[in-house]
Amino acid sequence: MSRKKLVFSGVQPTGNLHLGNYLGALKNFVSLQNEMECMYCVVDLHALTTFQKPDVLRNNVLETVASFIATGLNPDKSIIFNQSSVSGHAQLAWILNCVSRIGWLNRMTQFKDKAGTDKEKASVGLYIYPNLMAADILLYKATHVPVGADQKQHLELSRDIAQKFNKDFNCKDFFPLPEPLIPKNVARVMSLRDGTKKMSKSEESDYSRINLKDSAEEINKKIKKAKSDSEQIPDNLKSLEKKPEALNLINIYSEISETTIEKVLNEMSGKEYSFLKTKLADLLISEITPVGKEIKKLLVDRSHLEEILKKGREKANFIAEENIKNIREKVGLI
View 1 (cartoon, one colour):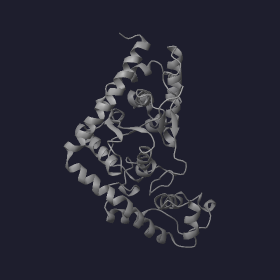
View 2 (tube, rainbow, N blue to C red):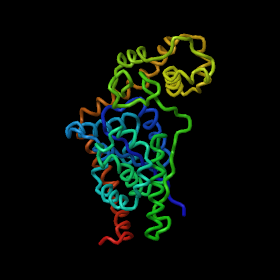
View 3 (tube, rainbow, N blue to C red):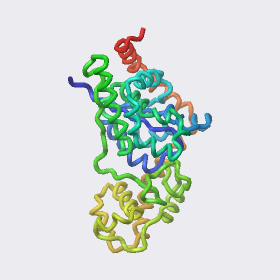
View 4 (tube, one colour):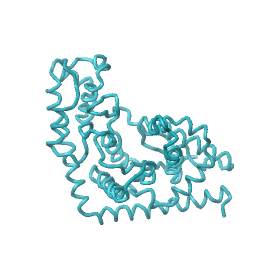
């Protein structure tokens, strides 16, 4: 059974988006909207798995939308909306909670990472988060989902849930099995302070990341202070494998310049890391500061961003309501 290709992805509204989000997700979103039908969701329900101040959450939702638009997403091409505005997400999540198995959730490594040593104090929402993610995807019968390596396990769970639903309710191929879209050549962007950790909004030091709203001066300062290495830049990748901070800077330069790592090392080998940092800061300033200026400009007119969400919600709801109607019939709900 062939289906029209539909891409779905969600971004949590938990503060400033950063370089890792830009290279790992947003640039890819923009490319995909020119190839397939796309839905990009600000997943505000997911954000509630940890406590959020209401006013901060509202602002973060709008800032995430502004970041989408500033990086090139077109609301006339892609459906852009916030998750909580479409009730089908929560409805389907409960149905899928009853399809999903506890053993499946117990295998989710991200819960273990986020809950830490005292998982008894973690919210139930954090534990069943992957079932809501499955509902996000399956509600629209999405066929493709752009994911990073850390979300691939959750997408596999979505496939397991879809298969079990189709089997339990004797409706073969009702839910498609969504395929991961993992950018082949995009390296994970790591912290500028610790090359073994992913660049994150939650890391305490602002010097660990390049935020999309950072000024040229801030970017320059952060790159200069980024950890690297006291030795000269080597001419081969293997020499960098035990130097994660140095490798991270090389990877970022490679991504921003759209050059292979091999070519970067050919250009940089034998030079000090200060040389790389100067060139990298210049590239980042050229690429990121126009995005940051556009985000700030968009945030001045909140009503425009709210209108984008309203139109996106109407389009998403149109699809969701028809699918929820069919899902309720399959399950036996009147």
